[in-house]
Image 1 (tube, helix red, strand yellow):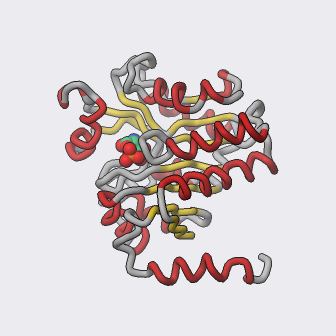
Image 2 (cartoon, rainbow, N blue to C red):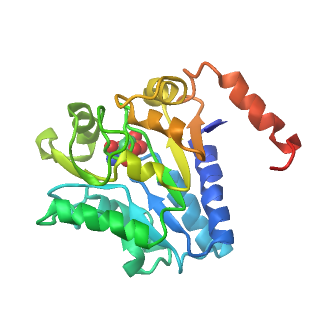
Length: 260
Ligand code: GLP
């Protein structure tokens, strides 16, 4: 895992967007794994800017989103379908048939989840997966105690997650209880992972994910098993890391490192 600490949210978002852009430059038909929440918003903003100002092309791209609330129609203002359309898809040129987001309204969740896993495989697997991190250390909606080899499935949200996300809904009771989410095992199969964490309320879980034991209590800690994860944090989110000096030292010494 490479830990990259940036002074603020904007710097972190721009650096992460550049990683995605570089992948697209070498592989224009890359498969991108998309995330929702406030953490990746800056990345989407920068990718849209690169598309508008520098001609970054998404015409051959395929995308798979991590998760969706169960029971919200795709038009609901808090559905992840709506979030992705508003914040990213409507601003770039990804063909609509190449966009995959888990369905929160299917009649058969088990069949849908199996199909979703198959589609990822048939499209060649995910080249780069964007991730945020929940305040309980979850990735996607893989709540504490999720199996670290789990696949796409229905999950019951933790009360902590419902509390965290209540700010987006009129009333706490309106937050869905269930979600459909890629599993930790699904996420770990992505060729590259780019996680973004910002703000002081993430500091504890960021430190636990990077420096703590691998545990299903903090599903982001499973990323320690992944061979190519870039873990971006801003100053506040990085404030509880014990090995902070070492991470900065690695970045400082990177230009002089022998080519691999
Ligand atoms: C939700 C999403 C996660 C996201 C998390 C954190 O639970 N399912 O994918 O990482 O929220 O959101 P934020 O980035 O807004 O803190």
